[in-house]
Length: 299
Image (cartoon, rainbow, N blue to C red; front, side, top):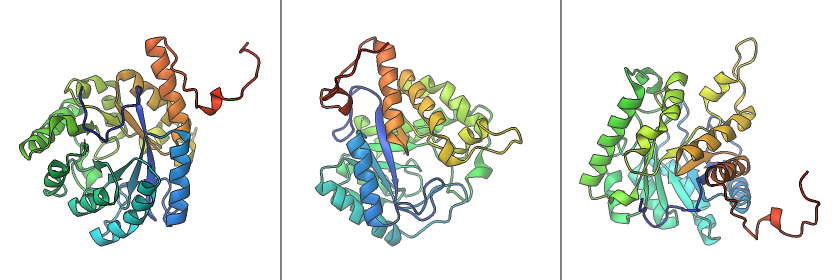
């Protein structure tokens, strides 16, 4: 498939690193709220090999309250400007057209819209005029309302059809087909059984002919899967192995990319998936693993 300029195509499943410059995101809220901390973390992910840094200034965790556009812009723009000056490729994680437009002007290259264009009708215009890739996620409502909207007769079919409607609306607004990326929206107006059903039938979304982004990192359905003997879900910080497993399987299924908090484990995961599928190992001579090593062959 042909994709718009600005969408990474590393020859394997792309890895998007999450950078939440918020005080209240579900997993890392407050850790990168301040610009200096955010920049250190972003550079660490970029140097590790992330293909895109996804900068967001508003939490979309279940139950989160909204912030206004001015606050969101104040949070993301200094970080985006600084990273752009260092040559870091970025997406902006926002549902607001004004934030997306400001972020693109500051140096972001991709719009990652968890509402799929539903939260702000003007987003389609910004995407069409800029020509940048636009991630359309499946969405049924804002964070405070989404749990009540997790009702489906056939989640795979309904998510496919609702995403198709978002694609049709984007195309009608002048967005080029090659600029569109789809995201099933794991955890957004979905219960754990919905998330697993969508992952097991990722082929249904891939059949629509657009790149697919999978965002499973540290989410509730993984915590519930890994609950202890008392039924207590595993903490978000302890879901990295499960996240990497999803990255491996999503890559093997044909996903264009995965969105994760810990890029190192998922970069390893997608490399394994690529080698498993092709039987060919692509060696990057600049990789730390391939420079200056004189170790003995593997046993």
